[in-house]
Amino acid sequence: MNVHVDVEPESVDRPRFGFTDAELAAHPTVFRDDLLLGKTIVISGGGTGMGKAMAFLASRLGANVVMCARTVEKLTATQDAIERLVGRRPMAVPMSIRDPDQVEMMLDSVLAEYGQIDTLINNAGGQFPQNAIDFSRKGWLAVMDLNLNGTWWMMQETAKRWVAAGAAGNIVNIVATVERGMPQSAHCCAARSGVIYLSKTLSTEWAPHNIRVNCVAPGIVETEGFAVYPDEALTRFHLANPMQKRGDAWDVAEAVIYLAAPSGKFITGEVVTVDGGQNQWGVNWPAGIPDYFNIGGAA
Image 1 (cartoon, rainbow, N blue to C red):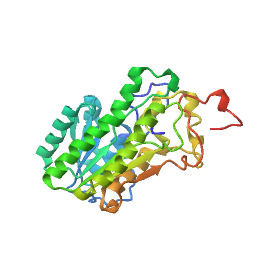
Image 2: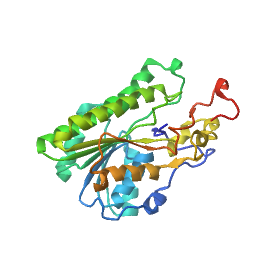
Image 3: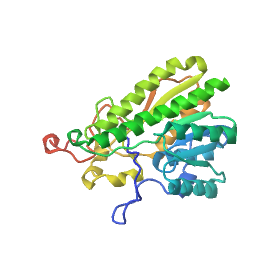
């Protein structure tokens, strides 16, 4: 499952998860330094986790990076870190993708600043581990509104601007591995499945406008979002894929850049899965494996 969750920093009695800013600035990449020079890339949820790794990588490759998220402090911290360590200062826009009016204002401010948007990366999202029978109505609606509706507002409003300008466009949606279901994350599974098939539909409908739409589906990818999961789940996460290890935010960032760069020019309507083979083998239990399924060391 995708563990991109908006959380506070982990407590002192939990290990550090994910990369430091210095590691993101220096981590080796397969891409050349000027690959995205002159391109404008909008990343929702860009202040933390996988979105932060994407912002660092795109900035290192020369892009004009725009990050949007709800929390000003996290955006500013990432903005300052990229400027200090990479030498380029991303644009940061505090806003909520759940509000279509805020989405419109954000996109218009980006166009006013840079004159174009080349790639939209819908990375913002979140969920909480819980058995489906215990979901509150508020909890269900919050996850659906953020992961599905928010992604839709971003896609539609950006596409409107591309079509009006006669400009090509590229959308990459961060989703999850949903083909075998997501026990204890049914709300996320429902929303992300919606995004996947919305993306496949729009990749056809918007092809005449030269707009590509793809998804990237992370599996067990370690970020600071791990801090919300119980220790029992953390000790078993790596057993949910045949490689028996966790991925990292860089794995996802490079997959996204592959689709955003000219390397992805003939790819649309697809889901690039970055999960160590979890789709083929293994089940993840983010709230802890129930006794019923805990048979012979099953993951």
